[in-house]
Amino acid sequence: MNEEKIEEILKRRDEAMQQYIAGLIEESDRKTGALSEEFQGRLSVVAEGVVGLSEKFDFLQEKVDVLKENVDVLKENVDVLKENVDVLKENVDVLKENVDSLNVKVDHMEGTLKEVVHTQKIHTEMIGGLMESNSEVKIELENKADKKEFIELKEIVLAMS
Image (tube, rainbow, N blue to C red; front, side):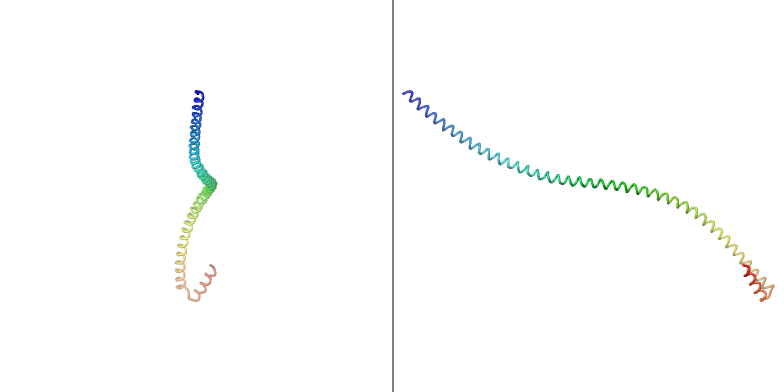
């Protein structure tokens, strides 16, 4: 009997162990399922974050590409501006040379003008003197000759000039 009792005790013990192990497996399955759901939820949140970051990265990459293109255009524009500035500098140098040349010509023309004005003044004085002499000659002629002779002399003088 002892053996039967031991076997029954072992059998009950075995059944209890199997129930205990089944309970542990069931609890483990429940905990694993809960952990799996929590992990999947967290993984879903991380995946959404990664998708959001990826979209932001793509957007920022597009902006960077546009900025690179704009910088390239700006570089080209700066190069063109540098060339234009060089051309303008050359034009300014040519203009300076032209202004210097014009200043020399103006100085020469001023000297010539002064000479012309001086000559004109001398000629005006000479003409004034000749007019006075002419008036004096006319008066003397009128005094010395009669009108008819005066007219004849006048015609002779006019013909001579």
